[in-house]
Length: 380
Image (cartoon, rainbow, N blue to C red; front, side, top):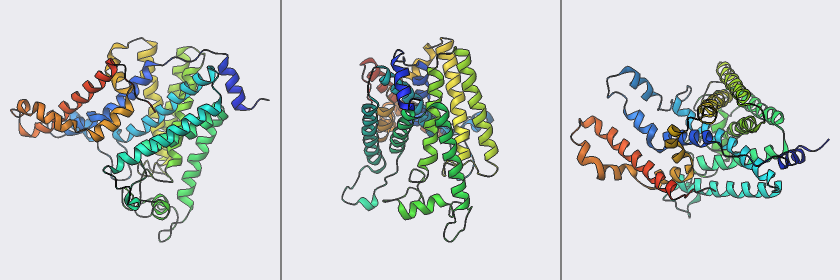
């Protein structure tokens, strides 16, 4: 019997390199839209229109204080999931072209190091490199880099079913660890803000500063469940890469969506859905939602062929790293104020911040459209 990595390489060499799916870029763009100003714009609408529906939607763009879930909690998990989906396409394509797994592994490893470095810069700018004790080392980009690297290794070594078992094992082990391992001064099974094991490990073993003071949701222990989102993304990638008909692919995606959501909601009764802890129920719920969103976008864009409407999102999704860092280092809202305040100052004052946020996002999109027109796509 052949080793999994050899089997994957031989199988993919026999096939043509997979093409890029417009739905993946569009969904990534939708996700980045929420990060690049769309989420802020929706949140600012709360309490201004007098429409209960708008207020309800706006409330979905605020993170819960601890346990609970809003749509805004889904944004980062969706990106991790899509990183895995894209990974399946890129690795399969690389193997199909005859690129050795070791070369792919080294490339992904270098990418991880670059993303970790960019993540540290992002979270600490302006950064005092001579005071490492006051640097925050946990970051969104670092988490993406690490999750993608581990998932790439697993993807080249293990089949789809094996990766599902690994992810399930990690989530169960994470749950049992937080429930059974006692925390000094609090005992075992304490999932409160003060007494959880995640925070205790961060305080005792994580260098630098912690975002929340007593813990950091992007630090050590939460890396393990977060990786599972990217692993599940590679499973979705396998489904889309399969030689079956589109209808069967959609059926599998929606089946996994339903299973993830149901398991997450049921697990919530004993292990609450909690983004801060990246609880196993949170991972299952958001992965189920990600399967559903991917299936919906795939059906509309790639199966039904309705692609024109998705261009708006694809412009964003094709330069996701650029826009993530750009909104950190370029004050688009201040540019919006300078350009548009003379217009929106005639509106009611409580709407000024809404119009300014909208103007800032328009500038963000135009910047990305310029890059798109110039065929500038920055990737690591």
